[in-house]
Length: 202
Length: 204
Image (cartoon, rainbow over all chains, first blue to last red; front, side, top):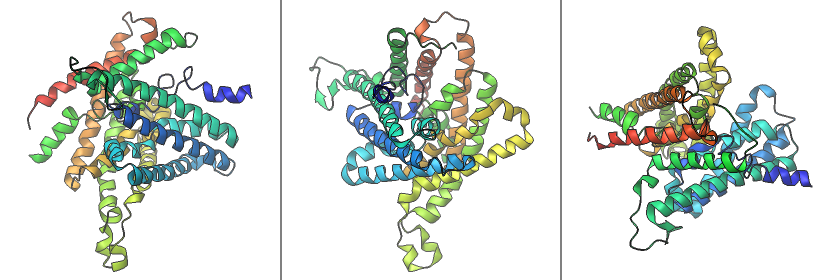
C-alpha cells in the first residue's frame, strides 16, 4: 500500500515531471497566461495520461517491440482527439483559447515518456497510479506558474480582481520571457530547498 | 514579398520556440554541445520543410469539410473528416522521421552517431506537429505553408544554437548551485526571448 502511495506522491514534488525530468515544458509555458486555461489543460492532460497508461499497459504483451512508438502514438492520438472533441462541445471558448495546444498533448513528452518508461513494463493498476501522479505533478507546476503570471500580469486570479486600482500590471509576466524566467526560478527553488539530495551537473 | 515577410516573421518575430514555446524538450536536452545542437537544428529544418507542405496537402485534399469534392462523388463531398487531423498528422510525421533517420544513418554516419537516440525523438518534438497545426489554424496556402515550415525550422535551429553557445560559456562561470544546468538554461532562454521581443517593433 505504501508502495502504491509512493507511485502517486513521488512525481508530485521530488520527481516532478516538469521541473525535474523536464518533460512537457512546451504546454506548461504556453497555456499559463491564465489560471482557467491552465486548469482545463491540466485536467485534459491528466485524463489522457491515465487512460493512455492503462491502455498501453493492457496492450504491453501484445505490442511488438519494433513498432511500439507508432502504437503508442496511435493510442495517445485517439485519446487526444476525444479530449479535443469534448472540449469543443462543452467549453468552446476555452478550447479556442487553448488553440493548438490541446492537439499538442500528443507530442507532450510526459505522455509518451510515461508510456515508454513505465506502462510498457508494469500492470494496469500501477500504470494508472503512475499516470495520475505525473498528471498531478504537471498540474501543480502549471497552476502555480499560471497563478503567478495572472496575479502579477493582470492583478487577477481566475478572473477576479485581487489587487486594487493602484496596481499596474507587469506585461512582461504575460509575455513569453516571463514564463521562462518563472520556471527557471521554480527549478532553482526546488533544487535548493526540496530535492537537495538530487543534483545534476551541467 | 508577402512570403519574405512571412519568413522574417516566423524566424524572428514569432519564433516557434521563443514565443510559441514549441519543441522545448529536445531544445533543453540537446543544447549542451554545439555539435549536437547544430545537427538537431538541421534535422528539424529538414523534417519541417517536408512535413508542413505534406500535411497541408493531406488537410486540404482529404480532411477538411468538403475536401473530398475532387473525387466527384456526392457522398464523399459532404464528409467532414477534420476530427482525424491529429492522428493523420502524427502518422505522417512519424513515418517521415523514420525515413529521415534511415537516410541519415546510410549517408551521414558521423551525424547519426552524434545525434544518437534523439533523432527518433523528433517525432515527439512538438515543433513539427505544432507547425502543422498552426498552418491549419492560420489558413495558409501551399506556398505559405512551405515557407512557414522552413522558416520555423530555421528559427528553431537559430534558438538552439544560440543557447548551446551560451551554455558553453556559462560552464566556466560561477552559477549558484541549485540553478546550475536546467534552471540557468531556462533563465537564459527567457533573456533570449526578451532579445527576440525587440524584433516585434519591425513593421512588415
